[in-house]
Image 1 (tube, one colour):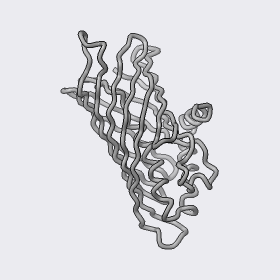
Image 2 (cartoon, rainbow, N blue to C red; image 1 turned 180 degrees about the vertical axis):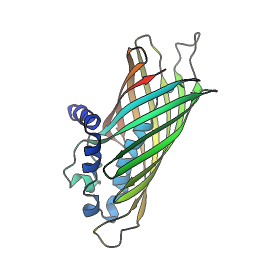
Image 3 (cartoon, rainbow, N blue to C red; image 1 turned 90 degrees about the horizontal axis):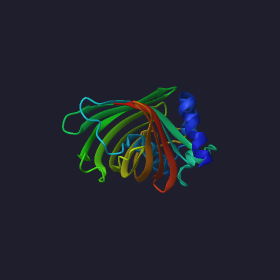
Image 4 (tube, helix red, strand yellow; image 1 turned 60 degrees about the vertical axis):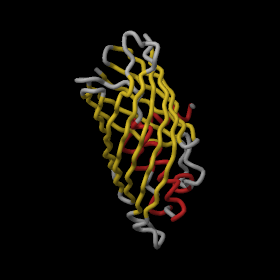
Length: 242
């Protein structure tokens, strides 16, 4: 957990540097059999960033967040990162969302720094929203996200689906949920002959449990433990919500 905490802080402070250095050796280390585990790790991080607890913002609600998501170690088969000496790693993103009528939210997130561009968006729907007489029940939501990733050496498309529930207690709001990611990655440049243009698709699941805390009016802190295709990780965000 200490590794995870340090990695999240590093991501938020040094976003551009972290994103660039993480994938800097893709071109030299990419092999045909390594593309799928690399894509699985990338998709897990993007999926974790798309997660929301289950309570719709409500019209005309709004949120703006800085997010850090981290995985404690690469997949055992992701030798692109492992052989590059990568241990805990992750992504920082900025996210904005607006609430629409009928318990629907529209949200988007992105990052652009030193050779990496990530742009994604999606819909969130509050299937059941607890009210005055049903506070003892959790609010339950579904969300669907799509992302496009462009790097100097590869590109990827990512799709995520999430189901989540949040209990709206007086001081904190605990939440839990599950998600599934599908990531297609295409090699743009590689030193190994025959894999430029190669595309592979990876799939993986996520489990999330965490807390929302509001230390000041409209200011939200969110922290969560995330299991990314069997590997521990975390998610942290600081933002405003109303």
